[in-house]
Length: 276
Image (tube, rainbow, N blue to C red; front, top):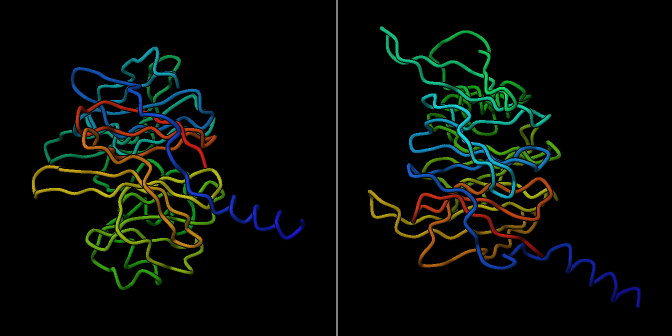
């Protein structure tokens, strides 16, 4: 009996995440939406438009969709405040010397924003404002991070993209262009390959990521599959693979009950429930 329960527990612990039902459209606007991000408390969801123009917010059920900002570039890797009351974005501002950037915190209640720091040319992402350790390096200087982190020296000259910190802060999943997805401890140890994939998003168990495997013809996406992976053993499985869907940029709800994603086929945000 004890052995049976132990084996059952091990099977459940390693069970793969899969879709529970069909994807359903959550957000849509005439100009299209992309890159959804859940608020930490799970009550809201944000998205941006083509070329990361503006920030749109809605309740978690997709109601009360509104534009929070129309600023250029504001949606690029935007991040929520820990209290879910504001969103930080990096805005593009044209100047006589070229484009500069300004970090802005947008208050959901008032719609107003306040600038954070000075305007400057920077590749830093909003997450860098609260990041520590090598995750800070990855988000402050994506192009130079590999050269600055000893474990990533082999990738010097490559830009680190889509770094994702696990909920417990112990692991970072990220991409290297042309080299696939990778995993590293937050202290810079234990680098290992996760294989082909993009835009890793963590489940709250700190043991599973959702990501996409995308195919293209050189100019357009032709197919995409939403996948899940157990990072302990590398086992992966399909979550969504449909001819009429191009799932991109997944974002897992804080409680792990569902994942939102951009459907490249119609530029709308969809959500699907998850189960193990």
